[in-house]
Amino acid sequence: MSSVSDHLGPGFTEEASAEVTAAAFDGTPDARLREILQRLTHHVHAFVKDIGLTQSEWEQGIEFLTATGQKCDATRQEFILLSDVFGVSMLVDAITHRVPRGATESTVLGPFHMTESPRRELGENISAGEGGDPCLILGTVRSVDGEPIPDAVVDVWQADDHGFYDVQNPGTTPAGNLRGLFTTDPKGSFHFRTIVPAPYPIPTDGPVGMLLERAHRHPYRPAHIHFIAQADGCRPLITHIFVAGSPYLDSDAVFGVKDSLITAFRTIDDPVLAQRYGMPNPCTVARIDLVLAAES
Ligand code: BEZ
Ligand code: FE
Image (cartoon, rainbow, N blue to C red; front, side, top):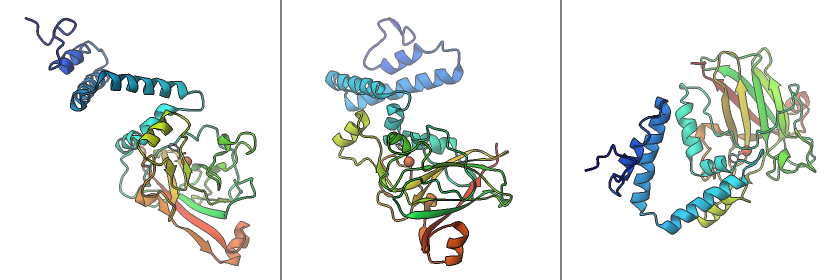
């Protein structure tokens, strides 16, 4: 009579499938990898049994994953997009970046941080184009206990007023447009000029787009600006600010919105402020505090 541990033999039955297959990974030397493989086996087998996966559905699943892999290249990562629309990217982010109270919350990196942002002086305009509502971003980087952090590096990138990143229009938009790498001043402050971003769809020309269509889900993200803030002794922060009032704040295709990241972009009528920062008056202003957790 065979036992569950005879996993390579006739012990494989519908009932014992998970135990038998998981046992085949018993010899994995790396303990964490072994745990992942064995727990994955249990979850996948439970899923297949739970929904009674048919041969034809299995084939469609394999075809879908094959197409997902084939869509990937040096600049396109369809598997991450798949993880994004299943909420897995945000779940991993939540588990990995449990921050202390008061620290700025993190969110997904997204696929458009693919080029190094150009170094820029504080106050520079990161928008080379004519279009869009001019906007001033006034920011600080500080620690959870309120101390300003000088010399912090703040990487910024955003879509234009039509919802496109520079890399999506390589012929027409100069590389580095709407991107910038800033260093905070002695008071931990930074500021730059830009335009108010627009909501935009995640890339839909691949299997993930097809999946959203089949599921009658829209592909849009609410208007946002991406930030990575880094400073000595602090945990790097990957986050966005979302434009308050933007469409899709309550239905982001990748589940990236957190209430604390929704930021007012206010129209300010203040000629002194406008002149000081080289803005038209009145102008749109958003303020952001990036609060970094200490390195653990
Ligand atoms: C983005 O914000 O750039 C993004 C994030 C996740 C998936 C697609 C786009
Ligand atoms: Fe984005």
